[in-house]
Length: 132
Image 1: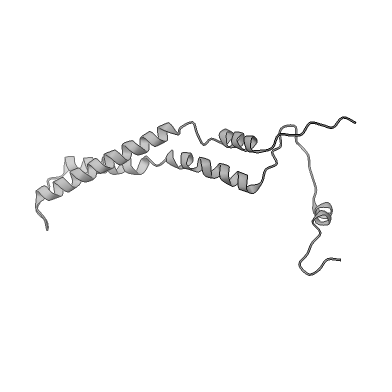
Image 2 (image 1 turned 90 degrees about the vertical axis):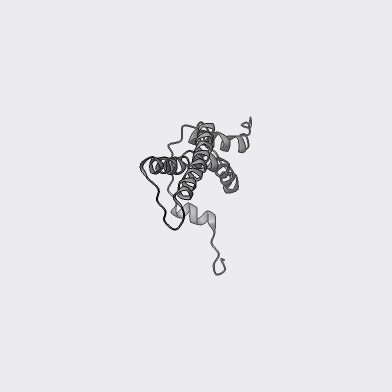
């Protein structure tokens, strides 16, 4: 007898589960914590592939502004405005170069195939079939 809130897992699976088998390949049985670790390990590579867009757009905007603007005195002298834009442009250039380098360095990492290979390595090897 089941108490309140208890279920018999085997009974639930056998009554409600329909299995369609189309397996002609490889099956990986692995725990969720190992999947989570593998995905976390590859997350940085996946996110770094698109991180270069923001700093590069910022750098292009600042350079365009420097080339097209005549700075005027507004609250601070015009030379201060120009220096501020030049410093910001320098920082944006450094940030952009760093982001592009990270994306280039990790361009081959973080693919679906690499994640699957990592999961295969973490899974225990199949035991040999028993000879009767």
